[in-house]
Amino acid sequence: MNEIKKILVTGGAGYVGTNLVTELLKNNYHVTVYDLMIYGNKLPEGKSNLKTIKGDVRDQRKLEQSLKGQDAIIHLACISNDPSFELNPKLGQEINFDCFEPLVKASKNNGVKQFIYASSSSVYGVKDTPDVTEDASLEPLTDYSKFKAKCEDILISNTTNNFIGTVIRPATVCGFSLRQRLDLVVNILTNLAYHKNLIKIFGGSQLRPNIHIDDMVRSYICVLNAKKKLIQDQIFNVGFENYSVEKLALMVKKNIKSKINLEYTKSDDNRSYHINSNKIKKVLGFKPIKSIEEAIQDLISAFEKKLFSNTLSNEEYFNIKKMQKIGLK
Image (cartoon, rainbow, N blue to C red; front, side, top):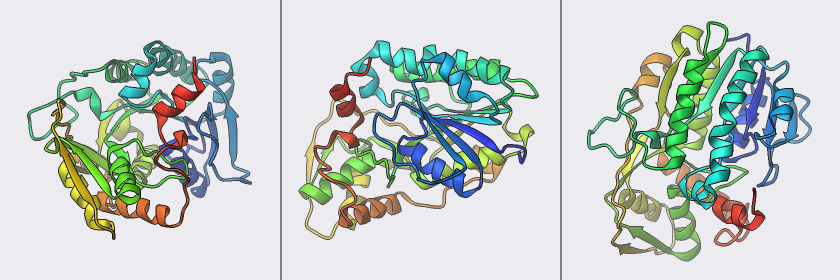
């Protein structure tokens, strides 16, 4: 879709958003970031094709103003993951669901041509089948996942030939970002192993789908550039490797130079999540090119360079700790 030049990225100062916006700028897109900046602003400085707006997605008037003149929107902004959502369910519903339909309609009314929505692979719930494809039934287990599923329906029900809607269901993202998160499974394991020489494994057999953050970024740009007919009303799983928690821990251990102790603990939560991402490869030719092990190595390299401070306690790296501190309402 080469007519796409101007892009609004909600949540563009977040973990994935920061890396995505950086790549969009490199590809000469004009990018507007709309973000509350709760975790600061690590976006590139001095870029003439970047505009940042500090704003809340619940502020419909301000958000609609930011839509004017945009060709596309990538909607990343949300209260991310179940623990953060459950900290304040009312806030989670307001940000993740209540303001979504007004945003979709405002985008459509303001001439936005393309809307890409970041949903979640958690909408499937727990499945016993080996291949969880986009056609699988949705059985979300939490309000976070339920609202993600409902937003998918809202977007698809509002599309037209001139308003292209696409849903992305990402796996758990891992790896290095200037706006780092250390509360995601691979990142948690790597942080604890590097700084405490200890990995605590709760259960271990549970499967978790993962994807390197660089590939997650590439997937959004791939959809952005795709032909309309290939992405209209489409839903794509975006993941790479479905590994058990134990295998992820052993992979981390292998890449740490010092001796690492593994501590196994029984878990009451033995649910496994896994997805099949063949559709996006078949339809758009997209496939991940970076492994989960490379994400681990990227994090270790960042730790060695001391790019982060107090990684075990600094709330900047842990969404729920930061939200508890600021008391967002």
